[in-house]
Image 1 (cartoon, rainbow, N blue to C red):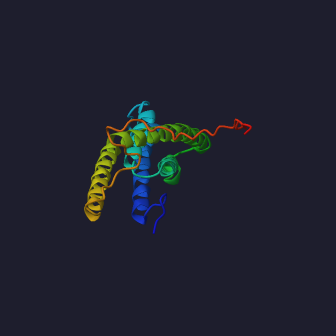
Image 2: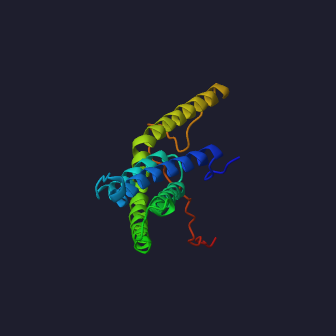
Image 3: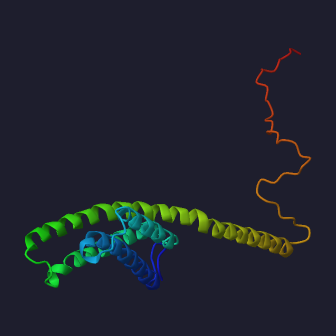
Length: 204
């Protein structure tokens, strides 16, 4: 059995799949910007902030039912997968032998863009993941909490009625602290006062 803070294997696999998928989407836009000289596709510099912001927010909503540490772990895993794919994309010209005579300068280009990716993706995705989780809790879990309270209230009334039926006819169950409506406030018991004056002695 899983503990209160534990996760089932299926939930772990879903968390892993969501994180890697989000990292792949972020890596696509970053790589497209970094390699626009080779791909001819440039979505714009704004996407470097918008992609981890949006993907982190969606990831936070998807992890609403999980603990906060699981959402943070998902954000870290998204960053790792995104940076790994970006590095692989940046090294692809060298791997395929199309970098020409600028290999030395290209390594500087790769390191520079790798640092930009790490600095942008992790903090933005972490904050947006937490925001998405909070929004998901207020928007999604509020209805679940309300239904659970209604179910608990109905079960409490049901059990109280069953106890009344099981009790004797002459015995009436009263809640703790119950008082009759016409009863006034409880008066403290008065302690009889004993006179300590000495008795008078008369001569016969």
